[in-house]
Amino acid sequence: MKDPRKVILAPIINEKSMLLKEKNNQVSFWVDPAANKIEIKQAVEKLFDVKVVDVQTIRVKGKPKGGYRNPGKTSLRKKAIVRLQPGQTIEFFETI
Image 1: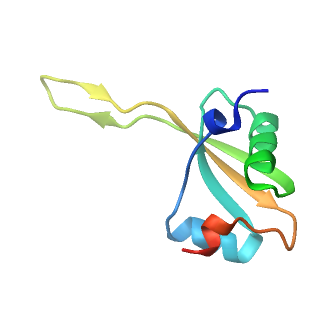
Image 2 (image 1 turned 120 degrees about the vertical axis):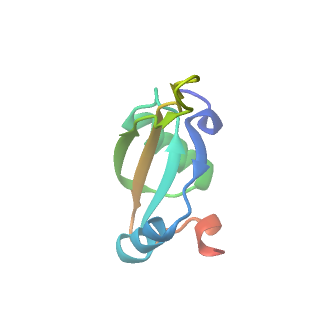
C-alpha cells in the first residue's frame, strides 16, 4: 500500500463540499491521479480513523493557460468524494 499522505493531497473546502458534508456525510479531497478507489479508501480510514462506505472519483482535466506565444495547460487532477458511515466525522471539516 502507498503512503496515505501521498494518496490524499489536500481537502477541498468550498460551498458544494460543505453541502455534501451536511446532507450526505461526504467529504472531498484532492488525491493522487494514479490512486484507485481502494487505495483512497484505505488512506482515509488510516489517516482519519473513520469507516468509509463509498468512494467516488472524478478526473479534472487541465485548463488551457497562457496565450498565443506561450500555450500550455494546468496539470490533470483527481478529486475523491468519500462517504462516511453515519455518525462518523472528520474533525478537520467540523471546525470550518
